[in-house]
Image 1 (tube, rainbow, N blue to C red):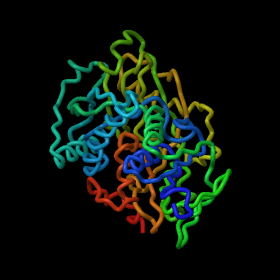
Image 2 (image 1 turned 90 degrees about the vertical axis):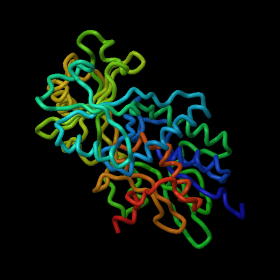
Image 3 (image 1 turned 180 degrees about the vertical axis):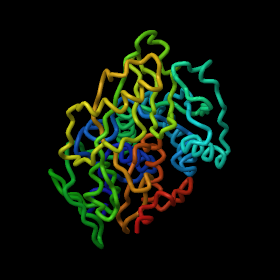
Length: 374
């Protein structure tokens, strides 16, 4: 190794980092992953049982090829580890035909040759009511849910089996590139590597101060069916995103493994910026109020008082797209999930591995290049 501990250190083994480590190890790259907590922990942004998976991604047409590749890699990761991670249930986009939600979803589908079928909510999914006059529902057959804790743990296991080293419970204090490589200083020891991949989630801005990244405190909420729980199982109440006429959006899906349905607001201006080292994990009344009001307005049959609340974080960029690419000869950055990254985690890990090794990317990801921020 020429005096180094590994060719690459991946710092932070959450959604992007665990998969970057796996994809590097699969290529035979000597890599070490360093994580301040445990695998699949609940201190950051990759927990809460489920995340939505959508192939037709309204946030940017360029995300559709990323989602397609992610689905392939989720299946590969399932085979590698014997862990069920991705459940495709189909997914709905609900709103007025000219709403930003429906318009962006249709555009992403058209650009990428995806077909979205219009469905009759009153007949097929009567749980969504009342529905405003003229609102429509588009179905993405290749949508569903993916399991965050299981996914991160599985990627770490697959990386280890492919030859990667992992270090848990060790926090990185300093990353210093120089002519010979990179010095990584942790709470336990120092490492010398040739390159680093920085995938520390809400802690990322400490390592990349020139990139505009803002962590936010984000509640996750579940709701109890008032009657007929089977009507709110995920196979009968699949993933959805819905926009109301006055602007607010909500997302959700039915219960998994006998649990309650999960719903959330697509965005909430009241969510405060967060210090990831001092996150308030207490449940506040306002954590329940917005999403409870949206459930009350648009889903008949759920008690609008959340049955369970956990506190998470997400990290936004100004354009709400990820950051993925080089910020120096020896430093590769992956982060800025902006609330919609986990579905893509496996493919983002592969893209990070491509960047490290200098191999061509499987799709054009220039729209997430950190250099767009100057």
